[in-house]
Image (cartoon, rainbow, N blue to C red; front, side, top):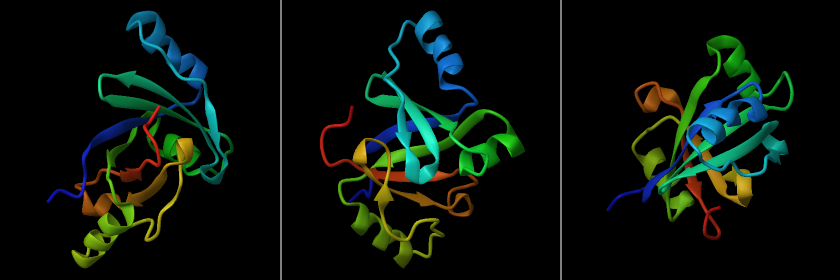
Length: 139
């Protein structure tokens, strides 16, 4: 049985959501959601729906946010890949049993009140990975 259902989103770290949105709106003709602050992570996010997958634009809200540190070190670009799971606690338990290194050992709150947890890049071929559990249909 699979721990995940589907790719939930691909996150792109950006300096400015408004500026980065122009490509998706003006060039690709897509809609970008209204920005939402995720205070716990010191970020502002907006989503672009493309079929069943979303692109998450992630802008740091302060210089000490993890995303600001990411951009300072690596520049703007793909930050993480997120997978949807139906039971985040069970997924985390399964990863712990397999000694997969975790950043979050317990769920925390993400955008749209989803429960999220990050898997350390060391356990996923160098890719920061997020697991998401939505309380309702995602928007």
